[in-house]
Image (cartoon, helix red, strand yellow):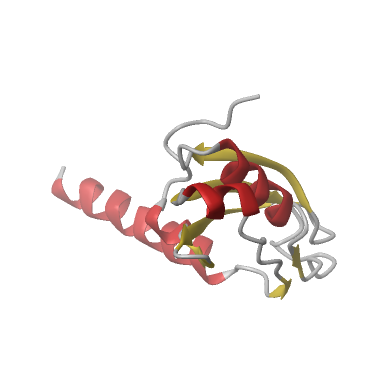
Length: 131
C-alpha cells in the first residue's frame, strides 16, 4: 500500500514540474496607464487577471479573478492584459494547447507594476473565470 502512495506522489510531482517547465516566452507586455480619474480621487488597488494564451500566443479571453475595488482600474488592467503576446507554440510540441497565466496589476501612487503570479496557482485559478 505504501509503495502505491509513493508512486502516486512521485507522478504528481513530475506532472507539476513539467507544467511549470514548459511555459512559453513572453514577447510583448503592455503596462496600463493609471486612469486619471483614479489618480485624481486617490484610488489604488491590485487587480488579478486570468489570461488564456492560445497556440498562436494571443490572449483570449481575459477574466478578473480579484477586483481592485475601482472599476476604472479593473478596466485599465483588462484592456492591457488583452494586448499581451506570448511566443507561438512550436508545431508538434506539448505547448500546442492553451496556456493560462494570472497577471497582477498593482496601481499605487501613480505607478502601475505588473507581475506574473501564475505560480501562486499550481493547480490553476481556484475560482473559475466568470462571464
